[in-house]
Length: 203
Image 1: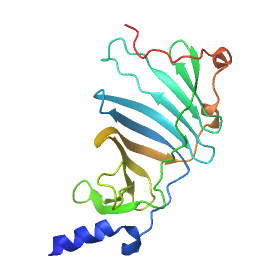
Image 2: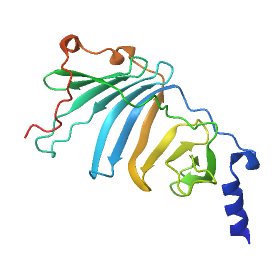
Image 3: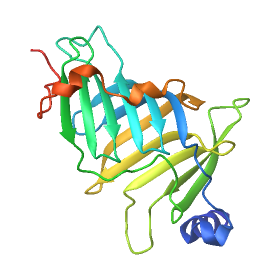
Image 4: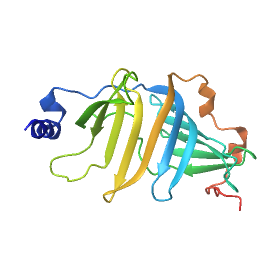
């Protein structure tokens, strides 16, 4: 009976429980690991996130054991709906049009509360909440976000498409603020940027 009650409360959503989504920081720097389930590949990167100005800078992490792999810096400028792809070695630049709307790293107001728990074991004391876009009329959620309870830092976000996981992103080593706003300014080589995306492999 206790389990049935908990399941009912979770399904009823945040409004019944009296819970509201926390407010995630608007500017931070840190690292992430993005796993693409369609390719089976992990992408590790340093990230600067500016929710105030709707821009993200992603600097891919070098991995020596990845043969032929090219590494890029990406500057996403959603207010201009463009992304710059910069080869970290040659500084060659591509300027591409963004097709997806700005999707901030936060918990939407109409999200459904799923669960609250501690990450790790005894003594770790990292408490987090899990939210989703699950609705009673839809069997599966398309987004699940895990955020810390204390400061509302993102821990993990998972997106699904056609009932299967598309991407999952893990966040770590986050720090408030932007230490260098110039990271969102494309280098001079982007003044003559090519209009097509560069290949991710040199082989």
